[in-house]
Length: 280
Image 1 (cartoon, rainbow, N blue to C red):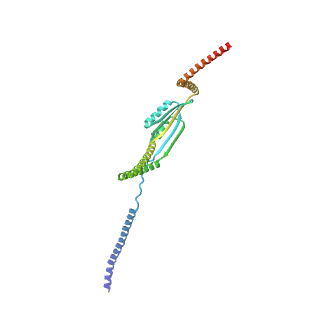
Image 2: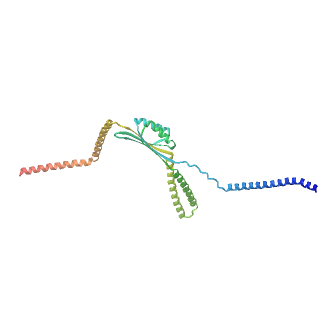
């Protein structure tokens, strides 16, 4: 009996080790299955999730317009400075006017310059200017309108293409005429939209700046200019009066002839009256 007990004790330790090993292996397998299941679930969730929408950055369309006016001591020097700035920034003159007032001489130049160089151009033009009589800069964002017009244009062109496809398949004259009518209307709308799109593109690519600079005229010089202007106006009025008389010379000639015969008749009448009075 004692020997049997010893045998059982000797077998108990190996059996306990084997049982512990099996228990550990089962627990580890369950954990691996749970991990695999979790990974598969996460992958499935990731596949079912919608892909993030990639937003394409829009190019902002800004229309810049400005007006500046200032006084200068030398009109020629200021004109030279503005001309150098125009050449430097590859701008161009849209319009140019010159006014000769009694108290000042002024010039106004409207310049179109690349929108990205608008601020730098103003800085070069305003060199040496201590005070602006007027400085007004306006910026209008037309990005939304520009994108909307592009979308409308794309839709109109797709509609035009569908009409052209239907026109190729049309067999009846009435169908052809109706499709051509619709096609002409769509083409007119496309040209109108394209015109607006070109205008916005041009206005946002090139900014507009109106520059007015003037030089004050002393009062003595102003009086001399008024006197000179009065002489000039009097001469011009005399010339126009002479031209007017030349234009109506036939009527003047008729009036002279009529007056000549009327005076002659009047003299004859007076002579007859005198003769009759002396006879009586």
